Image 1 (cartoon, one colour):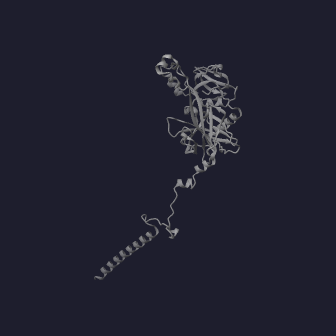
Image 2 (cartoon, rainbow, N blue to C red):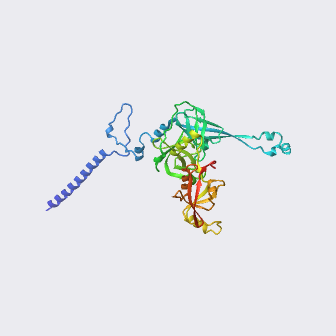
Image 3 (cartoon, rainbow, N blue to C red):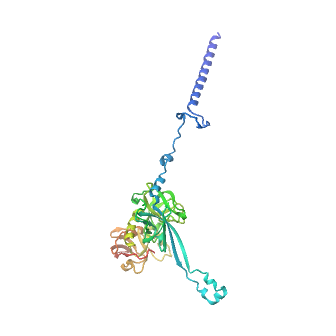
Length: 408
């Protein structure tokens, strides 16, 4: 009667033993396949050898796989090579001598030697960047780098220095061309096209910020067609490339490169109240200006002679509801004339302060930047048909453009 119970017990014991044995086999197999995380990596010393097939290959991170073993930044900078230069300037300014220093009482009180210690001249030094655009020694840079300089010295990356002669300056676009005599086989920076630039593209700034020669910074193109008015440079006529590549004083005039090492812009401006925001002149604009500067030494810009503001219905309504407002403005979209420059084409045509420009040559105008670009693209002496609103009336005026004489 006890045999059935014994048989059942034996069967249960056998089942447990088989389960334990199977678990041990699986554990041993797993240990053979997966090495312990605490196990040290194999090393080779002297004549020791090991089987590389047993090593576990570490997977590349996405960033490492994208950049590769050689940085694209290195390749881009090497392509520009020695075409980026440093520009040092010197300028002597004359200071007015204090008339009190010539007064007998003043000289008796402070001594005759006091006035002799007051220098009447002061030398100012400047620093900027540039890049060679022609083998003959043409260097492109910013106008504010070399403007009013008595002496311009161009230093190449290999240490050679040459005296630079300013061939032409255009303050309106902040561009200048400098010529150096260094033979006819200088390195030339490859020029790309700013038309093909897109937001998010790589942006590489090369130059001499704060006197630190041959400095490279990396970022992206933050936005395109940032107007000079938005940047806070109202006396310029430019649509900038905005970048977060670090740009500092001394970078001015240096190239902004794309990922292939082509120049897409000229580093020009920074916002003192912001960090990580810089602006560059598109290279397509610079090419056209540089050709005119090389040929004529200047660039003729047409102008109307108005100070203007983009007007919206909300902005006009805010003004009109102010009891202290000196003028009522039409609640429409257009360009509000804030001031008319005396003896300007606009003044001669009868434009008045408070007018709202609506159209030019039949094309609707809704922003000040749009009107500025329209005028910039016109010809000198071209007659523009301007439709405007004055109070409750609409008028049509003809304005003949003239040459802008002073950027300021």
